[in-house]
Amino acid sequence: MKILALDIGDRWTGIAISDPLGVLARPYNTIKTSDLSDFLQSTFQKESISCVIVGLPTTLRGTESNQTKKVIAFKEELENKFSSLEWKLWDERFSSKQAATIKSTKTKEDKLRSHALAAAVILSTYLDYKRFYQTPTNNFY
Image 1 (tube, rainbow, N blue to C red):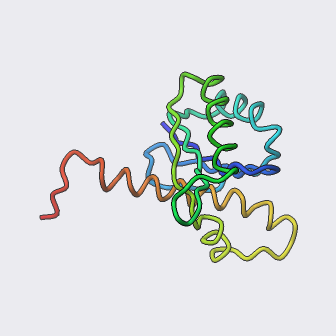
Image 2 (image 1 turned 180 degrees about the vertical axis):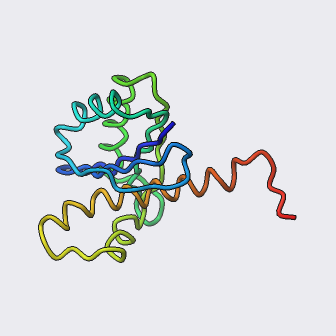
């Protein structure tokens, strides 16, 4: 089953999706945050999603900001609506900056796509963590 990642902003939400094996992350879409619930409803019907990773915007010191509180509240709202799925918060610090180094934003279309690219960075870090730290044995020999 696939894993979906969300980079939720006030205006736009970037979305990324994994392959069925949970190895690769790719940008999926960027939509208006106000349309997110309807978009997820449709996506969950089309794709076999087992888990949703929500980027958690903490400060560089690791503390909560107003945006952190908004994202947590929105995640809880979505989690209640789509309770059959697993929902996780994941640190998103530097994801937008990493996305900008991958692809510069010269046009409005590039800027919109950068949100989905940031979600792919978030998902990729989660998949890497999951692969490395949650394997049955960590034998390196």
